[in-house]
Image (cartoon, rainbow, N blue to C red; front, side, top):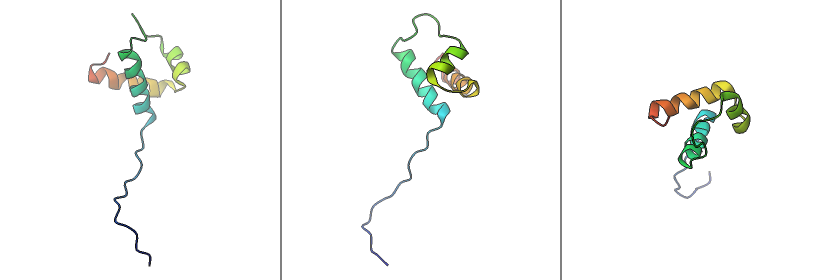
Length: 68
């Protein structure tokens, strides 16, 4: 049996697509990407390359956080 150095191994973080979408939307909002209104769902889905359920979940999360 090999002796390995004492290193704390941590598993990689698995970030959901919804969380990644929330992050992208939050960053765009903070940067003032949309001056007055955000585009519709279809346009956002195409831009972010996500499905509508994913986008809706991300928007719901932002709304819960008070970001919208």
